[in-house]
Amino acid sequence: MDIGLKEENVKAIGVALNGYLADLYVLVTKTKNYHWNMKGKHFYSYHKMLQGQYEALDEAVDEVAERIVMIGGVAKGTLKEFIESKTLKEEQGVPSEHEMIKKLADDNEQIVTGLRKKISLCQENHDEGSADLLIKMIQVHEKAAWMLRSSLEK
Image (cartoon, rainbow, N blue to C red):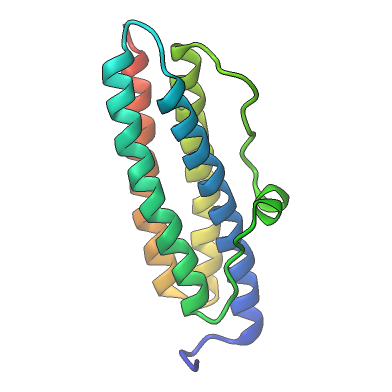
C-alpha cells in the first residue's frame, strides 16, 4: 500500500504499536483473571466494572492489530511474541480485591505514559492515523485508571 509512509517509518511505528499490543494483551488477560477471581465486600461492583474494562480492552486489541496491518506492518499474534514485547508485569497468584484494583490502575497509568512516547514517534513519522488511534486509547486508559483509583478511596 502506498499511503505516504516510508518503509523504515512503518517498521518503527510497527514496533511501537506491537509493544502496545503486547501490553494490551497482558492487561486484558490480567483484567479477566481478576474479574473471574474477584472476592470481597465489593465483589459485585468490581466484577461489573472489570467486565466493562476487559470488553473495551478486547476491542482495543483488535483496533491496534488492524492498524498495524493497515499501515503495512505485521501484527504480532503469539503469546511468545507478546511476552517478548510487553512492559507490563504478569500476575502470579490472586491478590486481594484492593491489590487487584491498585495493580490495574497502575498498569493503565503505565500504559498512558508509554502511549505518550508512541504518539510522538507516530507524529514525527507523519502517521497521524496511528497517533489519533493512540490518543483515543490514552482516554480509554485514563478513564479506567480514574475509575479504578476512585474505587479505592475511602
